[in-house]
Amino acid sequence: MGEAHDLSNVPNDVLLCDTFSQVPEDGSALSLLLTRTQLFLQSLSESPSTSFQLSDCVSCRAFRGKDPGDIGGYFTVIFYPLQRTLGAATYRTRVSRTFRTETTRDREQNMNLAKTWAQKICQLSGEQGQPRPLPSPARYLVLLNPFGGTGKALTLFETHVIPMLTEANAHFTLLVTERPNQARELVQEQDLSTWDAIVVMSGDGLMFEVINGLMERPDWATAIKKPVSILPGGSGNALAASINHYSGHQQVKGTKLLTNCAFILCKGHPAPLDIVSLTTSSQQRIFSFLSLAWGFVSDVDIESEKYRFMGYARFSIGTFIRLTALRSYRGRISYLPAISASENKDTTSNIPGSPNSVNSSSSDNIKPQVLEDSLLVPLDQPVPSHWHTVEDQFVLVLALCQSHLGAEHFTAPMVEGPGEGNIHLFYATSRISRISLIKLFIAMEKGTHLDEEIPHLTHVPVVAFRIEPSESTGIMTVDGEVIQCSPIQGQIHQGLGRVISMGQGNSYDTPTVTKTVFTNNSRDVQP
Image 1 (cartoon, one colour):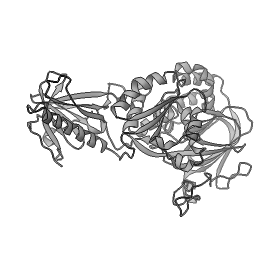
Image 2 (cartoon, one colour):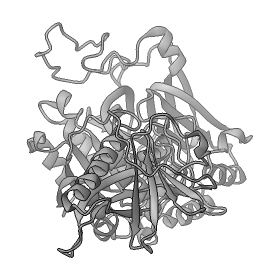
Image 3 (cartoon, rainbow, N blue to C red):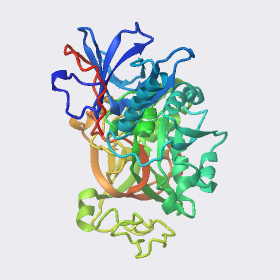
Image 4 (cartoon, rainbow, N blue to C red):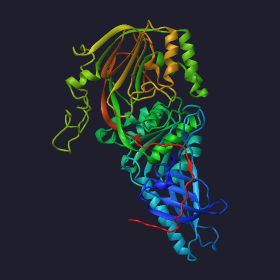
């Protein structure tokens, strides 16, 4: 809700200053002052002042009083500032303020003054941060999985998301999925121009369906640019936690994470989203926005499904069980380090429309038929000589392209945005001890695990990789979804998709007060 401000040094860009009363308070007079970035409230008595950041504003509207004899003009402004509680992470909470003006006995003049304030606040709040190219009001297709996580996604959407979308004047169509792959089929077939963005209220599995459905369309090169947004409604919620992190928020979970992500949906903008193109030994194409896991991570993820009713705690239980009977898997990992790739070839060369794209054409009307993986050779051929190869007995292998593996797993803290163009490859050999694994996952909650000395754990940024299990045993997952455990390879396509996020340029702090008093009680409107 604002920083500490010395109001004797109010910025020169003051646009409005008027006297209002706050309702339903005691009706005492307030001086409101509006700058290009903040709304200041000051009682005309010697009491502290308060300020709100316009970047936290989702709605402002003017209206008349319910009593026909009330000549006052009203406006309500709604903010979602970050609240700081002692010893806990900050998270967004709703703050609503309603103001009344009665500067004259003319009802229309009072109403026009309220409208002037409401319109100016709406305009300025929309100008904060990076430009938001989505139309206003925005139209969203909301896909919701009612069975994800603890099965409360629909209730949470109704209680935490719909009110904010309504306040933000957003329009949405809600589709509650009834079976697997329903969302995948829907985005394959629908005319996507009806909506400005696709919103997923679920865990990461439903987003996996959406991304692959978009990539399976004949017009995939255009369809994959349709912005997507994530609202956490599952158990893991890795993408939601990552977007929350990229937007400058602290790590939270549950309804706090949901409120943060709903705010990002209302105030954010489409940002590039990395997509990893995977090819299996059966020539199946799979598209990933998050991770590929083999070994410990995927074992815990899938084998803890029986504890889904416990929410995120299921992963802690699954980790403990798996540590008591640790498995290892023989195989070979090959990869192209990010540094080597930058020296040999532009890793974005296969993004349609990029200057170096193999699919690019002088004609904008020619669209690529297939997304090509120029860094990969067929799986039945040896990897290129400049790749690195490790053959060993592995406890875990994880290829991650976002910051979080779960709401409480800050696995790749070096990732600061959804489109950075690197895959973070982690692998641990069978020589790693159980104590080291416990140390790893405890430190991962705060993202400090890479600062720890953990023998036999390796991390390397790559742009392409190949995993070749010696046997088809074990569990392999893509974005948390099980696939056949067999040889697989992939490369990243930087910024191929779009996801609604917020840059970290905006800083948010807790509400503060100062002792300076406003004395300007007249209206001052500047162009």
